[in-house]
Length: 478
Image (cartoon, rainbow, N blue to C red; front, side, top):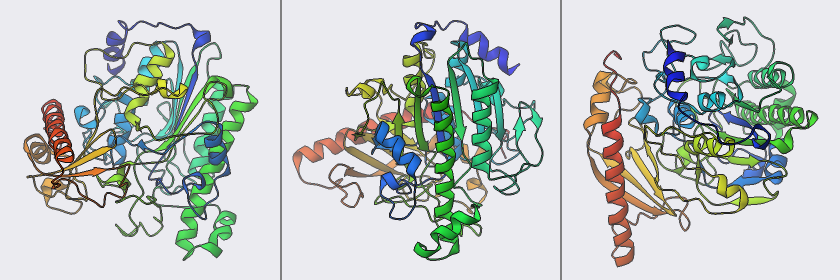
């Protein structure tokens, strides 16, 4: 049933480019990787030679953003090109929960598949609560012809997990670390399983460096001399293990002579986890760089993430771009490059960054916008337009982790608050001059800055109201 609904919509979407002109796409998404966790983004100790090389071969995105400061929402936004609240993915989705990415949402995978691409998802899915169940759409129902996935984390541990599902069939116990197992499957699909007559889209979703962090012993030992303790060494080693997995994927593309035909986009689903925020977060030593906040924050540390684009032969090497790019932009960008028409019956919040690949500016009609109702910060909403960012407080309750039942993930009561809360107080920052968001300009007396504030305030309220009205309810979520 889920597939038929999607296909009925997609039949009306034309393909406008020949197969020979269309690139392959590989998206590599980490889980809780901080802006400052890679060598090429300034980490003083973690060694990431493969990602550093990837950045040198293409574009290092200094102003790259996740679609949300939390995992499920960020993934839904990337897949659909829409602010995740429009899809009702307000928060991370617990196992068994009724919230899911609905069949009516159209993903980039479904669009590309209908447009003649072969598609695969490997790794963390986290876009439904009832994973591998006919009660909710699964990766295969959202356009992935092949999937090797988990609902949330690799379990019971990231070493030797036993909860992967391949195309609806449980895989059973596996030997190895999750990121390497995910890379194994992606490489196997590219080399042995995909339709070689078609271009392809491979979505690689590592579980690392999300807790529970586990890393190869030899890598942990390598970092003991530069770490405060073994837990920090475990984290540093975890990121290097990700780098090794990325290196293997890139090497496979090179061996298949596909690098020049493949756009690689590397990023993270949100900022780094806060150390000891919960009992098992003792190895969460990720870095937001010099930005304010962490995962679950509306400030930059929660949403600004490392970003790399590589497409040798098409994208000039050695670039550094300060143009804001977001996970929301994946769908419109890939559609443009693949010659596939994006959905026209719904609002898309992303913008194609295809012009950026040739050094041209991006014309972003919809400002970047975030709303996370359980943000650990007092502000719950943020909007960026050019160099300017505004964050907004609301009159709803502070529904953080561990609060009363209204705040315990998505339920009918919490959604009612999301649907009715008003914005009441604002902060404004110039991110080019003040990337740390230390100098709130909302109360400035400078006429030009004051005019900028009033403009951004009005834009934020308008966008918030539109998204709030479009956001669905989950009456069965209790």
